Image 1 (tube, chains in turn blue, red):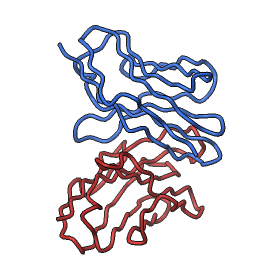
Image 2: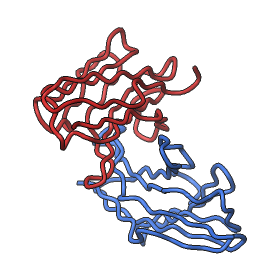
Image 3: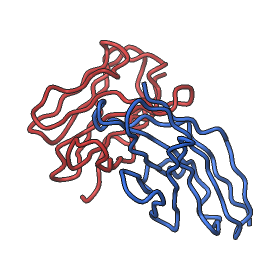
Amino acid sequence: AQSVAQPEDQVNVAEGNPLTVKCTYSVSGNPYLFWYVQYPNRGLQFLLKYITGDNLVKGSYGFEAEFNKSQTSFHLKKPSALVSDSALYFCAVSVMEYGNKLVFGAGTILRVKS
Amino acid sequence: GAGVSQSPSNKVTEKGKDVELRCDPISGHTALYWYRQSLGQGLEFLIYFQGNSAPDKSGLPSDRFSAERTGGSVSTLTIQRTQQEDSAVYLCASSSTGTTGNTIYFGEGSWLTVV
C-alpha cells in the first residue's frame, strides 16, 4: 500500500526567510509525487509534480521540490516566503499499479508572519 | 468555464435525507475523481471514472454512496439516507487522461452539513 507522511502539522516562518514543508512517502513501485495548496474555503490548487528526470522540480509561485529516492522524501521549498503563502499544503503520491489515484498526506499548515 | 465546476457549493440537509452533488469536469478530460475532505479523515479517495471503463468504486465508504457519470462528462455523487458523519467537503477533480502521473485538477468543493 502507498502512504504519505507530513510530519509537521504546522510550519511557522518569517516573511523573506526560506521555507521547507516536509513530505516522505512509502510505495511499492516508482512514485509520482505531487504538491497541492489549499487556501481557506477553497479547493486544492496544483503546485508541482515529480514524474521522472531531474530531481529538482520547479512549480507555481516560486515553489520547488526535490525528489530524494534514498530518503523517500519530496520536501517543498521556497527561497523567500511571502505572507500570501500562508495556507494548507498537501503532499500526494500515486503509483502506476493503482492508476492515477492520489493518496494524500494529512497536510501542513504554513504560517508566514510579517 | 475553464476549471472543474461543482454544485451546490454549500448544502445543509437533515439526517436521513438524500443529497446529490454535481461535478462538471474540465472540457475534454476523460478521467474524473471524487474525494472527500473531513477533519478527522483528511483527504479520502471515493471513486474514479476513466472513459467508458467500469468505475473504480474502491473508496466508497458504504452502499449509501453512489456516483454516475453521464455521457462521459458530468458526474453526480449521491448520498442516500445521510448521516451526521457524512458532513464533509466533497471535492471533484479531473485529469486529461487516467494515465498515472497526469495532473489532477480540483474543483472548489461542495460543503455538506448534515443536521
